[in-house]
Length: 629
Image (cartoon, rainbow, N blue to C red; front, side, top):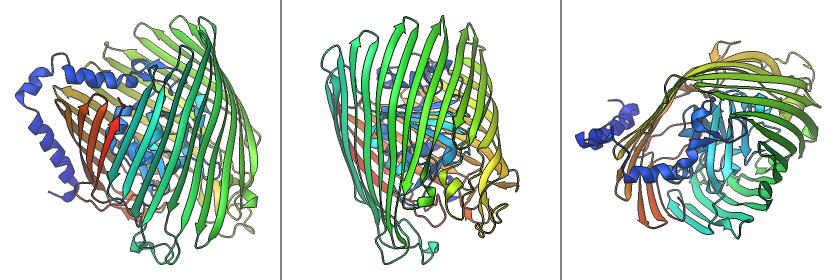
C-alpha cells in the first residue's frame, strides 16, 4: 500500500470498527438522544442567507452550498480560516507557509480574485491584489460560514464568478451569556478568546468578543526556494482581534444596529537570509444598519459600511505600505408575495487605494441596481435575478441568472441553472508600473450546471456537474501586446480563455451513534488558450470522515486528499498529490464546559501547497471551551 492511501485506509478501518450490527439496526429508527443534541446544535445549518441575500430554508435553496456551523468550527482544530475552508468540498487553498502567511482560496477552480468574501454582509478584500487577505480574518470571531458555489454576480456584482463566502461573526442570543476558550498546540501555538452576549431588555441586544492568537511557527520556505527566498528562521505570528454587534429595537419590526470587526496581524515571512522580514496587516469593518418592517410583507434594510485592508511590509528589499478602503451604501427591499419573494436592491460602492506605489493609487465607484424573484409552488422551485453595475473605471456590466428545481419526492430534488458573472481588473492589473494596462477589461463568465440533492432525517447527499466558461481572462503575457516600450518584460492582459468544469459530490449519514461524511471533486480547470491546467488546481480532491458518539465523548477521524497539481502556468513545476490524516476527540466535562484534543497530520506527511513553501508537520492542539454550543 502506498503512503498516499494510508490515511484513507485507516479511516475506512475506524469506520468499520464502529459499524457493528447494532449500529445498522438503529439506522432505520429515530435519532437517539445524543443525535438530537447534535441536531439542535446544528439547527443553524437549516437556514441559508447568502444564496439569495435573504434567509431561506436550506431545503429550498437552489444554489449549491455548504454551511459551517459553530460546532464544526470548534472541533475543526484549524489554525486559520483558510485551513478550515480546505476541509470543505469544492475548495482548494495555497499558502506561503503556515498560519499567518499569505493564502489563496479557490472555489471550483476559480482563483482568489474570482470570488467574493463578505463579513456580516460587508464586502472585504484588497483592490490591488484582488480577493480577501485570509490571514487577517480571525477564526476566533466566527460563528458561522456559508459557501455558495457558482456565479452570483447578479446578486453581488463584480468578482462573484466561482462563488461567495460569507462569514458571520459571533452574535449570541437573548440570555446574557459569557464565553471563554483557550488552547495550546504545537509550534508554540497559544489561543485565548472571551466574549459576552445577550439582551438587557426587550429592546437592546449586544455581543462583544475579543481574541488573541500567537505561534512561534516554522520556516515558511524550504532550501529549494533558493538563496533569495530561503531563511531557516521560524516564521511566527500574533493575531489580535475584537468584534461586536449592538442592536436596538425602536418598536416591533424596526431595529437600528451596528457591527464591527477589527484585527491586527503581525507576521514573519521569508525573503532571504540575514533579515527578519515582517508584515503588519489590518482588517477593519464597520457598519450601521436599519431594518424596518414597512408593511407585513415588506422588509426594508439600509446599511452604510466601510472596510479597510491595510498592509505594511518591512523586508530585506525595502518597506512598503498599501491600503484599500471600501465604502458602501446598500438599500435592500424584500417583498413577500404569498410564498414568493421579490427583492429589489440599490448599491453604491467606492474603492480607494493608497500606498507607497503612487502609480497604483486611485479610486473607482460603482453604482448598482438589482432585482430577483424566488418562486415556490408545490413541487416547483425557481429563481431569477438580474443586476446592472455601472463603474467609473470599467463601464457598465449586466448579469443575470435563472434556476429551476423540481421535487421528485419530499427528500429528492433535481436542479438546473444558468448564470453570467464578471471580475473587475485589480488596481495592480490596471496601474502597477511596467505590469498594469489601464485599458484592461473585466473577465466574463457563463456557467451552466445540473444537480441532484437528497436529504432526510438521517442522510444528505448532493451531486452537481458544472461548466463555467471564462473569456477575457487576465493573465501575465510574457510579450505585452500593447505599450511594449514601457512593458518590456510583459504585462497583465486579457488574452486567454478558460473552462472550469467538474463534478462535485458530498454527503453524510447517521448510523446510530456513528456519523459518516465525505466529499469528492473531479474537476478540469483548464486554460483553453494553452490547453494546460490552471496553476495550483488538482483534477481530484476530497475528504472522508467518521465521528462516533460515546456518551459525553465524541471520537473522530478525518482524511483530506488531493491529486497532483502544477505550481506554474507552463505546467512544468509539479506539486505532488497528498493525503492527510487527522484525529480528534471532544468531551463534555459539565454543563457549558467542553474540552477538545486534535492530532493533525498524524502521519507527518511532507507536502506542499506552493512550491518550496513548507506546511505543518504532525501537530497537536488541546483546548477548553465554556459557553459554546
